[in-house]
Length: 183
Image (cartoon, rainbow, N blue to C red; front, side):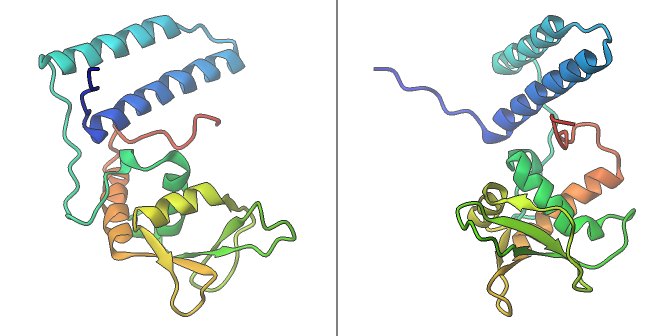
């Protein structure tokens, strides 16, 4: 029995983002009735992956500056959305205070929802599902608020991850992952 070689998680994440971009472009073209060349996009992505595997092409580095930081591309998309909303105050473009997330009290405990609590205590109109929150907790990017056990706050590792992300946003890095394929 042969074992499958391990692939660098950063490279895997970048390949997933390439697939998300192709799907998003295809969906957008279908919605608007525009022409599309999805097969050509997939072919180019496969050629690029082959060249990277053969060593003929080097992927650009997005190494994070802090040893605590997690590379943005390796976060699941729903977790990225939550951390984005919790930390957008770290961008030069968006002033404001740090945010928390608070678990909504629902009658059906099987579907926990979380909403954003701003520094001034106001709550967001929208909410997030449990899966993204669990992923951020598992990665150590958010943790229980010592003052309010139902709230989650961004940890030091989460702040470092978000700082690196927002620096890339402020510098208009074109390699950043899409926010949503559904949009």
